[in-house]
Image 1 (cartoon, rainbow, N blue to C red):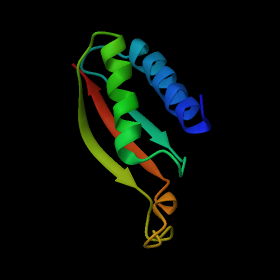
Image 2: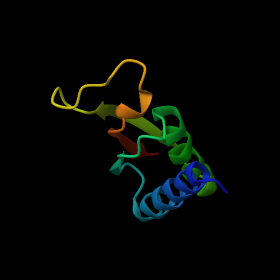
Image 3: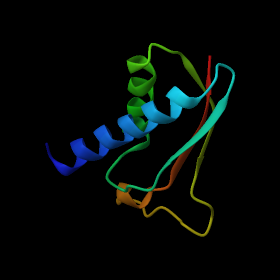
Image 4: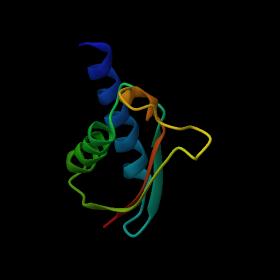
Length: 89
């Protein structure tokens, strides 16, 4: 696998472990600071982790970098800070 594929697989495994410890109704914060992993890919990894466990989750909130970490136009990798709050159903 390429480095991006390994990163996605690692996020999937990490979130599967976190979700497996979470009771239904519980909330988990999961984050990524990888510039090569997009918001969409990160959320897909979390979604697949939930699917692996045969559970449903809701995204309660998305967050990113503060104003002190501006994104440079034309350089999507500078939008590297991602965080989502999910609730296990």
